[in-house]
Length: 456
Length: 82
Image 1 (cartoon, each protein chain N blue to C red):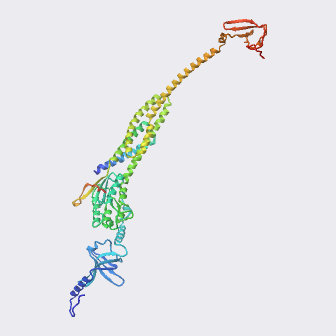
Image 2: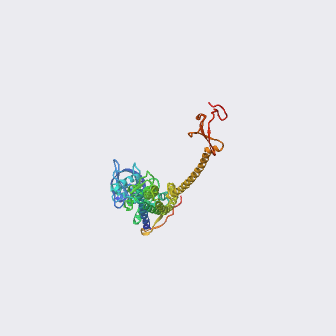
């Protein structure tokens, strides 16, 4: 410690200067803890306040260059840990501590800053649900603010393609972390808002530490989002990360991929709607052909069949043209992996009236031929049978038997005599031979068969 | 460029809306056959147009470059490979 020579009388200025030198030498690098009071954010950018504990207080100042680096805002009553140097203010002889670093005690500076800004903007109504604007359903031009080299842009573009967003992407490349990132992001938001074609903005960044994501917690970004007339979708970090930008945004998606998905949703739905409708269209033609068939069936039972056939032919022609068209459609459908439709086509062609009628004609012709064959066959069969029967009848004719040497005997009353007891001796009978008749008389009855055997 | 896109979008949506209307009419099933076939024919045509539009559309990506006075110029953006 410098020694003051005895009896050397110093001026006030000299004393203060001496103290200044001592303070500079011994108190230029110290940490201090205390409670903030009498806080004054001066318009010059400097911050003046007192640090105190139960028994003492000290004037404190944080000049603009250091104050700008503070992530959070000081508040009266806040417990802080700070770093700085002691300095004497020569004109008043009061000394103060000039602080270059201030951190809230107990809670991280960034966390503190986050909470503070969140409270502040919330109070201003920047997070109000009424402020959230609806996103365009089918955006044609999408602005993306992110790093051109990160995983986030790759993920987002991949997702937009996958969900078949038919649009133009305008990438505004920015730094997404570190010094100056927040300013770049705010500038990009303003820049896209100057264009008249951008319909929605995605603000995206991949995962990272709270420090990495910090630009998205800065007021300048929050203000720029709030000021954007174009709806803003955020996809920052991972599922669990919430930034101030997320709160102000019109829609907060959990990740860059989710943000792209949200923006492309309308396009995807439109395509699904189309594919559904296309399927329904094919089903209606099935129904139509089914009804056509039914009507053909119905009409074919009426007399005016020729007329029906003519009408059917007309439909045929038409249906064939349509079928060609359908084949074309189906070829496309197949190329876009639609197997369902392919199956439907199979079924459709089975129900084609042209095919049905052709099949019917063939069947009818077959029947006709069959019938003729059947008729011819029957007639031939009948005459053969008749001839055979005639032959049989002929063979059975008694006259033919007589020709072989047999004779028939009739009694006087004309009864055929089969047994001897039908006549008595002395009676007359008529014997019929093949070439004439004999009138004979019965002389004697001799019982016995042909072989002279006795009959009982 | 934006205008052209806009027209295409409207075309597609209009075509789809008409297609949906046609399907409804066909499903209703009360139309005479000739009319149904004519409607179907129109539907097939619309479906084909929609499909072509869907397949033709692709994502176009441009990068914005800020010039002096905040003017934004576009240039094609090529993705860096993984």
